[in-house]
Image (cartoon, rainbow, N blue to C red; front, side, top):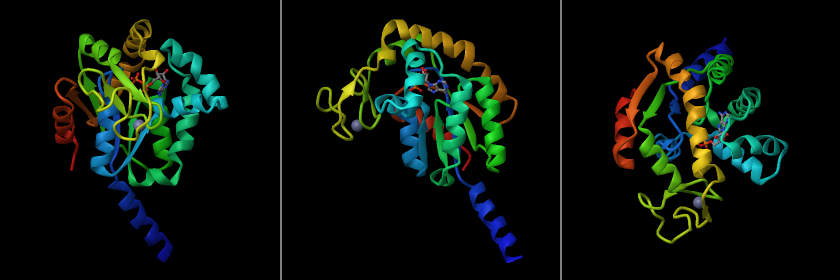
Length: 231
Ligand code: ADP
Ligand code: ZN
């Protein structure tokens, strides 16, 4: 009796945790905003792009599988991503809440995520969709530099590091991702329109979806996002 009472209590607490999904085209600033929001709310920043790049650096089986897709600007197969995220979301550190950055990215990943959450008795707090025009996106991606060590994002014009080529946060090396080069950028935008945009409709069927303009300064966008997240 006492046990079942306890379980209910724990479930109630778990229910109040912030669980966010950040959607939006490549380059709109998902990674930057997800990092800030994770800090604001004390939740975990789960970036599938960062996870995959770390697997590639460590030459794991997953990294070796993912690399050719990423290099071409294509998506890693749904089955692989769902496998990865099922295992990730079963870990204890996600219990305090999280922001998903880069997942789900296709309709099958969206429905797969619902199944994973159902099994874990978790619900999403909000699905945040950053929107912006092509010009902004291409400009942001081509100037983007990423820290090899901690994944922090800089921009050569809008957000230059204090020391050229060095991460402000950890001192790691800033580099231009292979998939941030012009021909791959074009492919990624097409892939986004074809495979990720249908997710918007999926989430707009419930009231979880909140659309936010991805224009403006980093701080302005953060403010706009925080304003639409239920307290
Ligand atoms: P961006 O959002 O700027 O495109 P990410 O770092 O999120 O960059 O992703 C980089 C690449 O990693 C994608 O182009 C894709 O190849 C792969 N990837 C990341 N997340 C997923 C996912 N959920 N499903 C399939 N592929 C993914
Ligand atoms: Zn760093």
